[in-house]
Structure formats: C-alpha cells, structure tokens
Length: 120
Image 1: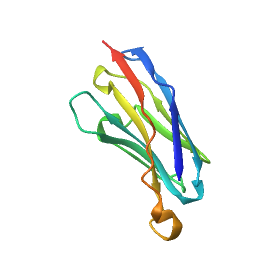
Image 2 (image 1 turned 180 degrees about the vertical axis):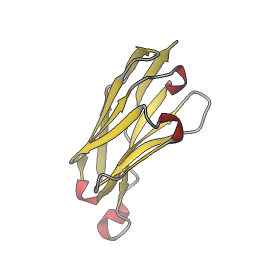
Image 3 (image 1 turned 90 degrees about the horizontal axis):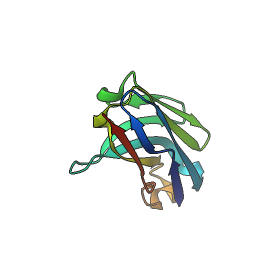
Image 4 (image 1 turned 30 degrees about the vertical axis):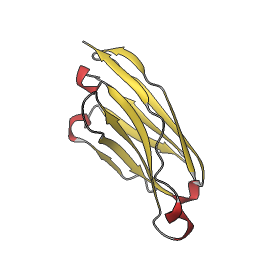
C-alpha cells in the first residue's frame, strides 16, 4: 500500500503564501503521479494540481499562475502564493498508481488532509 502524510496548512491573510508538503511511503514504485485536491465546506472535492514522474504538471484554472506543484522523488509540494479567501479548503494529497500487476490491488491513496484558511 501507499501512505501519504501531508503538512503545511494553516491560517494566512489574503495575499499571503503557504507551502504544503506530502510525503509518500510504502509501495512508492507503484506511483505514477502525485497531486493535490481540495474540498471547501459544502462543496465537492476538486483537483488542484498534479505532477507525473516525468515532472509534467497540470493545474486547475483558478490556481494557474499562483500555485506551483513540484516533486522530489516521493514528496510533492504545493507552493501557494497570492492566496484568496476562496482558496480556503481542506487540501488532500493523492497518488495515481499503476493499474497493472500488484500495483492494481492497492487502494487509491489519499492523505488525511490539511486545512488551509485564508482570511480576508
């Protein structure tokens, strides 16, 4: 299995910055991509950004130019700048795993979530 542990959330004023980290452990050879999702109160979980093993990145439109995702082996980071109150959410780390062989038996890995609160 793959375990994900997030850190770095907190309270920040609008316009400020935070950096989230997520460390993966366990069957990390099964991981093809790491990413971040977020869920605001009363809303569905949505993707924020992702990075593949080849360091190809994707971003949700509303965070482009403000958030930067990066990866160092089995740790993924989300640098969040120019934060807005609408960025307030519980942020979850997620891993995409290979869908073949042993790796296909691994439950989809999710972190426990880290809270980001942006005050206006």
